[in-house]
Length: 177
Ligand SMILES: Cc1cc2nc3c(=O)[nH]c(=O)nc-3n(C[C@H](O)[C@H](O)[C@H](O)COP(=O)(O)O)c2cc1C
Image 1 (tube, helix red, strand yellow):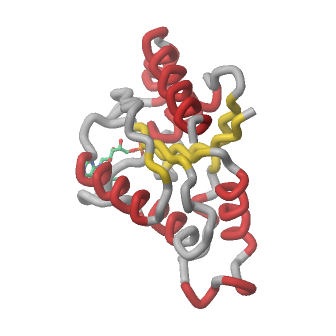
Image 2 (tube, rainbow, N blue to C red):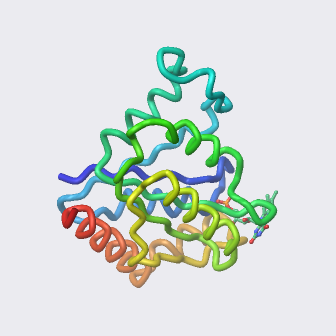
């Protein structure tokens, strides 16, 4: 069983990115379990002085979750043409460890815009030595939609299929490594 963790870069209660990662968790194909990591807002601000023995427990939880995962999926909004601080902060806790090295990662998208954040995130993920899989290209247009419409869109057969297909190809990528 592949153990994949999915992270939304948004802390909003009605976040479209969080709805997308929840849909990934609901629609995992056989042989795949997707667990949502939703503790971005609990992480302290990264400080290199607090690494090693001083690693805060909340950061250790994230580091362990990534270490024990077979793959990581990220869905992230764009703020002012950049990656939101909460997600960047979480990634910073993983930089000087082994957790990310060679770890399969995939980006999925809840907005057709966010092109600056997409490419910045891909650059960060590659620089951290994740093995970025860019073959699936899952994008569901949820930008600006309210919760009921988001739920309806994510329940549409074609989107359920697209979510499953992205997970299946990502799982194949993980298994091929
Ligand atoms: C402070 C702030 C800045 C934003 N800046 C951008 C931006 O530069 N480019 C963009 O495409 N969208 C921008 N947006 C829109 C968000 O990326 C968009 O609403 C996204 O769907 C929010 O994700 P969420 O529903 O998961 O919270 C911004 C939103 C906020 C709140």
